[in-house]
Length: 161
Image 1 (spheres, one colour):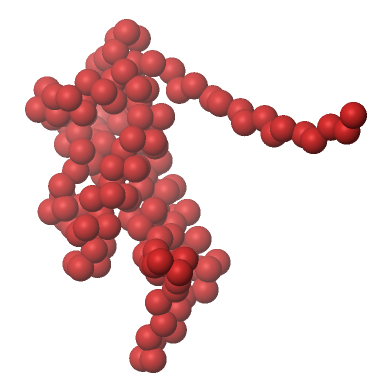
Image 2 (cartoon, rainbow, N blue to C red; image 1 turned 135 degrees about the vertical axis):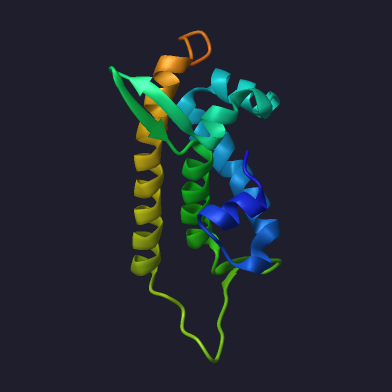
C-alpha cells in the first residue's frame, strides 16, 4: 500500500533494507491495517488503491460541523512498518537459526530500548489512525467496512485417563 520512496519520506529506515521493507510492509498491511479498517474495505483498497487516494494520502473533511484533516493510511503504515522493522532489524535468519549481528565498532542496542522505540512508533501510528478513523466513519458505509473481529486462542490441556 506504500512504496519504498513513500516510507523513506515519512519514516526512513536503513537504505539497504528495501528487500526487508517489502516483506514487512506486506505483513503490516495484511494483519494490522486489515484489522484496523476491516477486511472488506482493506480488500477494496488493495484491489483499487487509485479509488481511495484520500484514504491513503489524507485529506481535509467535515466532521461534527468542523473542518478537520487526516494524514492517511500511508502515515499509519509507515510508522507501523518502522516499529516492526526496528524489532526485526538486528536479527538474521540463517540455516543454523536466528543470529544477531555483531560489529566490532558498534554495540547492539538493549532489547528494552528497541521495544520502547517500537512501542513509541506504534503509538504514533495509532494516533494518526484516530483522525483517519473519523474519515472512514463518515465516508464509508457499514457494508464497505466490517467490524474488527476479536479471536481468542484457547489452549488444549492434557488430560489423564
